[in-house]
Image (cartoon, rainbow, N blue to C red; front, top):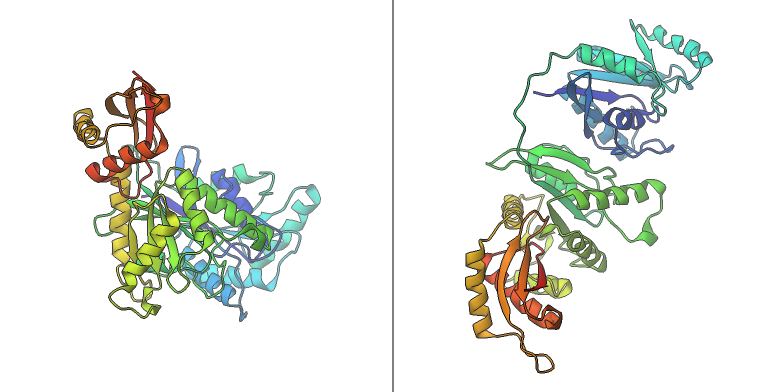
Length: 436
């Protein structure tokens, strides 16, 4: 089982910078504005051959009525409960503050081992100033500068000395990656909380609550995959903060790395232009997609309501219409597990390989029903078709005498035949026509 360390402290002491340094990534958003990190953020790190997980947390604040700070405080407590070792980060520039003393008291009460890390120590004067933190009653502290890496080697030596020797593990097979994407405030984090059965992500009525792309392993009900919550994607003109810009960029990168994207819509608002833009972004990146209409419990329904919604959504997504649509409510848990069923089905479709023999049976029937039209008196003859290996999405090569004369309508006809025969619902497929 992986060792886990949590990074905690008051706001703006450099926790996310240290997280990025330890994980050698830019996963956590870093900004001078306090309170940027809200949810727990997870990453992996390796030092001296020992692998461990790192949890970044929001800045701990007490006595505040701000809705986010109350939730962040609860998330910090959850991270402390999860961790085997805690890095308590303080800021040498500010010295010992009341909040530092409060966090230190909280860690003492938790009975968890923790290391005090004095950040922003990048010269000899600040190294002397760091001694002030011994007044908190700690035995030892480590002076670092997380922005340039100074002192982090000694800190990591101490961290891994607490861990047992690593045991050789069999390399795991690829685990599917599912990303939940959509506009702000459509219920992405609420849905993940419902799926995992705990308040894993902060949920408020404020649009843009989630900022980082938060990944976690899901292993329930016979499913095994990585589930990622992302920041809401809104129009560029409405991105008012630098932090929001970084959040959006992170969500875009998450789409690029996912196997299947779960595009979430708000049933009370229907499908909007930004939803269509996000869908086309997913499709351009050749990712599988499941469309989820959340907040379905708020809609007054009759026998035609669901069909009406489906028709409207597919008309806006045209010409891509072979997409699964699930109507759910994160609050009432209506059809929430159906999301996982459809996402897994799309992933299986995305990784499906069809034998050449079956493809050519399909091709023979398609050519008999509707042969390719002649072009300038020249007859097009498609000889055979095969699926190309090692592509991120199913790709099929058709070999014919005059590939340059096959027009888009006939290509769509062949694509639809492949979809009807072999079920590639939710998956973009590519057709290539080559000279025989």
